[in-house]
Length: 302
Image (cartoon, rainbow, N blue to C red; front, side, top):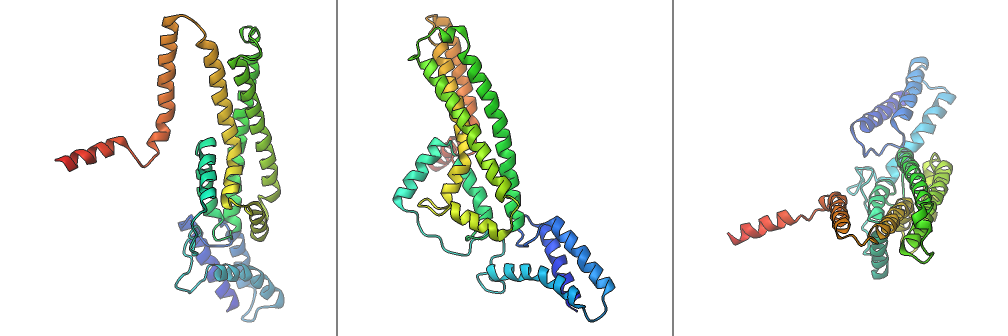
C-alpha cells in the first residue's frame, strides 16, 4: 500500500510538470521519470509488506513532497496553487527605494525590470524549488555567454577605432577619444561582471533548494531587497549598452566634424532614422500607444 500511494503521488507530480510550467513539484520531469522507475521496480519486486530498505527509499522521496505541501499550505484556503503565486501581502516600497529603483531602471535601460520578473517567478515568498532554480540559472548562463560574445566584438571594434590614424591624430581631450575610452571601459566591465556572475552560477546553479534559499537570502539582504539581485544581473547588459552608446558618440563626433553640408544632412538623416527604428521595439512593447489614445479621444468626441 505504501508503494501504491507513493506511485500515485509521483504520477500526479509527473502529470503536473508535463501540463503546467508553474508546477509545485519539488522535482523536474527527468528526475520524476527516474523516481517513477524506482517506485515501479519496488512495486514489482516487493510483496504486500515493504522491506526496510524499500520503506527508506519511499520515505526519502516522500519527505520532499511533504515539505512542499507544508510550505505551499496544502489543503488551506490560502494554499499556493502555482509556483510563482505569492500568498503573502507585500508592503509598499519606501520612497527612497522607489527612487533608487527608478534611477537604476534608466541607467540599465529597463533591464532590472525584466530580471525582476524572472526572479519573482523563482524566488517566491523567500522559497524556491530545485527545478525552477536550475532553469533560472540555465537561462542566465546562456544570456551572459551571449553578452560575453557581444562584448568581445565591441572591444575589438573600440580598439580598432582607436587605432585609426585620423583618430590618433586628434588630441587626447577630444570627444571622440574620450567617448572611445569610456566605451572600452564599459565593455571590459561587462566582460568582467559576466565572468564573475558566471562563476557564481557554476557554484550555486546546481545546488539544492535549501542552499539556493540561503544564497538568495544573502544576496537580497539589503535595502533594495530583491531588486538588488535584479540590478546585479542587469549589469552585463547595461554596461554593454553603455559601451555601444559611447561608441556611437565617438563615431558621430568624428563624422559630424565635417563642414560639408551635404554630408551632414545625409548622415544626420540616416542617423535619425536608425535611432527611430532602434527605439521602435521599445515603444511597441509598452502598454501605452498613441494610436489607441487618439482612437479613444475620437470616439469620445463623437
